[in-house]
Image (cartoon, rainbow, N blue to C red):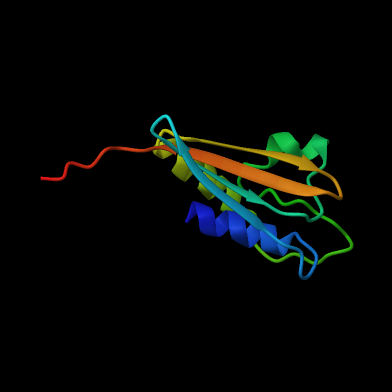
Length: 109
């Protein structure tokens, strides 16, 4: 669900045919996943509200659909799995959302 939300947002807030970069790695028993877009970006003054319920980045040059709950839900899911989620962004350059969740060893028996 988290990955689906992040990819959906990256696609929604990017101009047509812009690439989306998905990076997956693991380190120290932690899964690390990043979704990078080259879209409109998030203004610094709106950064503290990004994971709030019903928050949406408004941009008059695009018409975005959605309720503004995807990042809120993603944040809740990650927290319940004792992980972290954060982002970096530059207006006009795009955003990168990264989340981590702990990996658990599975017994082979």
